Image (cartoon, rainbow, N blue to C red; front, side, top):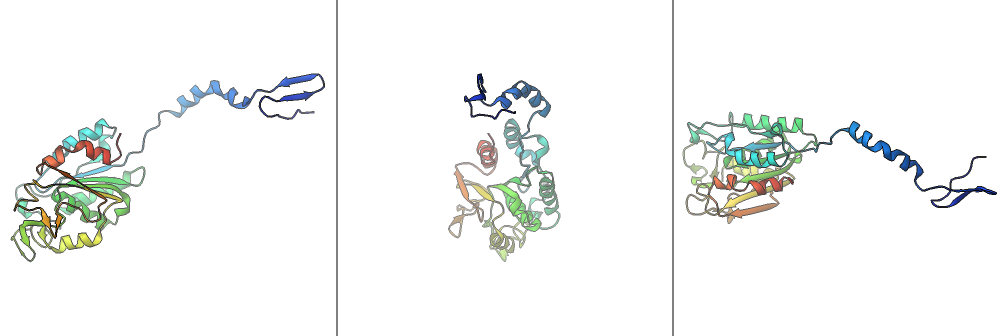
Length: 257
């Protein structure tokens, strides 16, 4: 007759035939095989969200070199750091949020979503690139796919240096699809927020672009604050330094270790 299993450390058997059954016998038999099983499994790679890095008006992808260096040091492969190039650097005032400027950013966002192992992406955008990225997120309908959106030195409430719509400075950048205070573009973005699960803005009161007229406030709020954001950070930095001197915090907000 087969002997019953007993609780760990209990005696089993009949008559004079008695023995102690050690606990977890089956697990102990597998212990010598663990190194082999781990070797066969191979290394486990972390699932990292692709990050779309959108430069500002008149900028270039290389503006994000400090951010890329920080993220690469924390484990992001270069293939997951996507830097679209948009707009004209020869006629900066000709750039707005409509037409040819949109396509490279929209394609970058769609590509990032398609290759994401988690189905989510992150976005870091600087200056006018922040509002341009937000508009493409709205048009693609992917706000629920964007985990973290960091808007650095944006102008979501407009630039006083552009004037007030429709009595704005006569350039595309300041027009209906641009950054004049009260423009239809900015009204649409305010109505369609949020643009991510966690939107964060970086702002400065000495930003020489956003605060060019001597004030950064529009309607009592700093213009760099993003509609629907969950947090905002203030720095005593210039417009470009807001991007290049905050890379550590950028990485930490993406959940990097």
